[in-house]
Image (cartoon, rainbow, N blue to C red; front, side, top):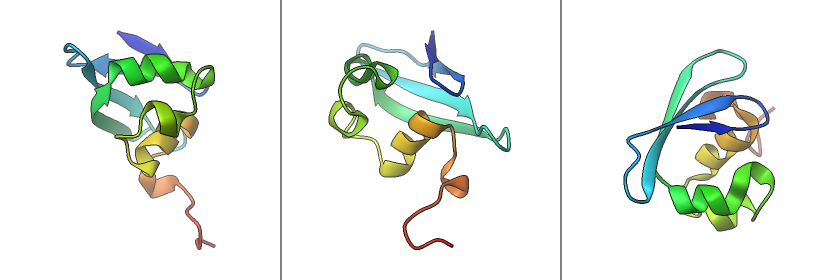
Length: 84
């Protein structure tokens, strides 16, 4: 199963009753990135930015994991407050 995001299409693997693993690539480096144990119902509530706010729909994900879904950047390439 695939999920289309603004920046790329990611794969949903290991789809079980309500969890899956998301696999995508960093938009700058092409480095593979995996997010395990993602709520499928949460993904539906978020609807790739057309539904609920991602932090409300997927509270179990870290800030870095949610940022990857929003921007396609892996944690190594994300700017965090205080970076210059």
